[in-house]
Length: 268
Image 1 (cartoon, helix red, strand yellow):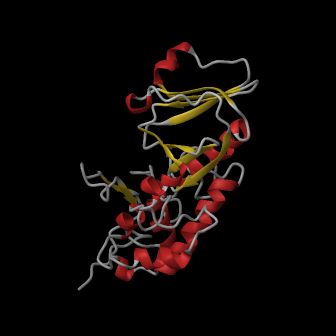
Image 2 (spheres, rainbow, N blue to C red):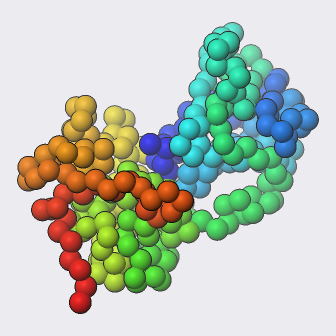
């Protein structure tokens, strides 16, 4: 799932291929920027903020992209090209001189803006555990500002903490032993934030650990509850339950939990 750790890993890969190199071809295949020409610009670097990727150029411009659920990037080696059948899916093409080419496929968000205006697209986000300016105290404050909010919904709200998607929201609830519908007032928020930050960093930086929450890389056993509806809990054997997402409500994404490890505690 494309969450903050996924985008962080993507940025590492793109840095190796593009940073400090000059574009011989820079195409943005979206109507709003179809006439913008990036040829000849130098790639200064890649920065992530939550699930957002910012590619900065020496012309004072930033390419802002977001994967949402369907986007992806692929990089081809020097002299190689994307298969012809995939070219219609390319929304961004960044080819460096005498080097590789990066293709952004089916990207739902492609913006070109002045670097000084990056705050317009990421300024609303909460602190990100993968950034140098991470503030656990600010994350705790934001998560606690709505005590009646469900913990799963609060974790999904990027204005509270940037980078947690549905997989992490579900897995963190399991690891903390709280039902996803638990009100934030009943959650140990500092402990939740500390665990979430530690897990996201480990997933983003350790080889073979990407979104493996159980420590077991075997298929079907990488996660405690996410994607395991109807299967026995890996901790207690109880059948993992699932609730379908509510259309139009981003806080009501598909939810998994173990009813024994995460008992519902309704408030009086």
